[in-house]
Length: 267
Ligand code: 13P
Image 1 (spheres, protein in one colour):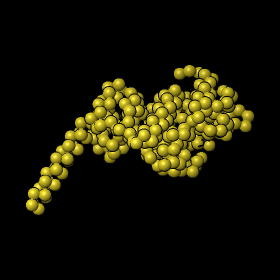
Image 2 (cartoon, protein in one colour; image 1 turned 45 degrees about the vertical axis):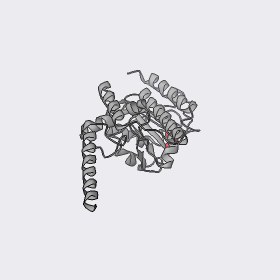
Image 3 (cartoon, helix red, strand yellow; image 1 turned 180 degrees about the vertical axis):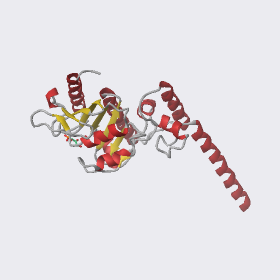
Image 4 (cartoon, protein in one colour; image 1 turned 90 degrees about the vertical axis):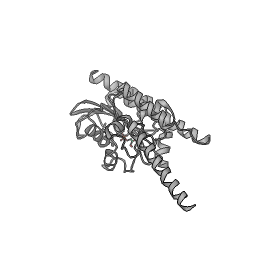
């Protein structure tokens, strides 16, 4: 792992990127990186993430208590949300919170990002659910987000924004970029009359590719394998797994047989 000063510089660089790409306005958004089980670097509260220098970055313990901060800088007001992610997901090394326009518009409209519309989004991102609204800076947000953490690598925050996390800072940031790109495509496709979604068979093949790549993180492809196809619609409308498609075609056959029997009995 890079030394602490290098990581602080990387946090500033990613802060500048999310600001320059319009993923945060004014002083919005926050970023953190795990150093070890009890030391985390995070952005300070109330500053523009586009203009930070390494001295801005604070250090906290696993409960969000300050270990080190320069001058009047205090850790992000959302540090509890970041800490909940690290607590529930030991595989996570970095967390990014932003308010990207399209993703946040979906979070405000109450529409989760679960439509399978393009291969890259299905493979790399998976599905993005919406965590119930919570008042910023309170425990309501970590509490709302917690139940989604074991199954997803990105979550929309209702009427608020988006949260992404991954093994390291660059991957967590890329997840935010992919999420926003996907949300923008979905929004625009809806303007053009609605997306033509990938079929269950196509999704199934993409899940197989994802499993073959052995990509880190949580994804419907793994979730479906773990749950044997019983993921209750927590993915792209189906499990993309053999078990799920077999079950659904068997169910379909059963329904067709029952309806046919009913019609025939009424003739
Ligand atoms: P902080 O500046 O305290 O990190 O808060 C920004 C934000 O976006 C809150 O949701």
